[in-house]
Image (cartoon, rainbow, N blue to C red):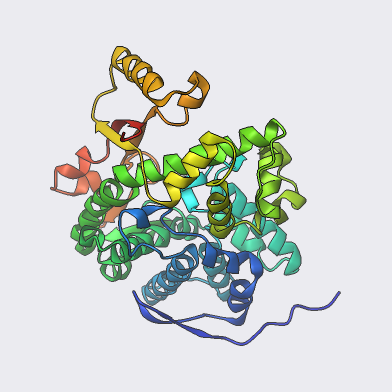
Length: 409
């Protein structure tokens, strides 16, 4: 078997952090791989650009930025006496670099729509396993860290926790590109205050105020960007477009699309059917496949598909009502009956134009993998307990909001 031959190192220029140095040639080779290059064509924040015109950044940029923050984090921990081997460093760089490689078109907007019951983290793991074979086992340790089975738990926490490099980058990056300053956190300060105690990631007490701002910023970014009601309307409309296309294909109606997209329209894919062939097809699918198809579908003979597609392309988004309490079932029924009369369509078709649901925002989870503060006396407390900012405990509770979407006319 031919031995793996690394390529040269490189430096990237990032608008958030400036110059980013790729730590080693193996990481450069992963970045150059077609699986990873696909992330250049995957939107970081779905259809949020329909609300915030600048939000056109990609998963590629986010992954590189997360890896850059990981380099800073490991450097800080090593200076504080935490022993991290070169093999562990490479592995944790690999894990954070590839943590989002399983995202499909428009990221979270179509999660579970193309592959039923499979989260992007599962797809990321599958891609890492395929790459591990291709790179002759070089990703084995990274996979263990990603899965959380490696004994040194703090390494997994750097990749996936409530204060991981993923969250630190996406809040800074998404707030920058969306132009929403409320999400701009002090990532450098928090990273500088990182430490390890009893094999768990902790944050020194001096960084507590930065963490408080981080939690509040996360809450604000979810309401202002990720769960913005207009962005929500756009992403639900995208879901409906794809659902209608699948329904027509299942009935034998021709729905033109690229070869990768046609595969997912024709084959219901779930966790049980996620074989290597399906994964390879998924690796060829990106935002461009969907956008190109939707532009074509705007002229489709099926009225529902054409109207939905044209509305999305031209930003004719449904009206959204959002409230803190569930809608009255009687009122919802009356709304559907009125829409049925005005829109002149069947009950089945109406479900593509009038629909309701709920969204959830939980800025901080004090139960699962909490943020631990290392106090000056050496004790460790949950941020919700250590902080004198009472809102932290309030932000630990999930907040539900209920919506209904319907045509503006």
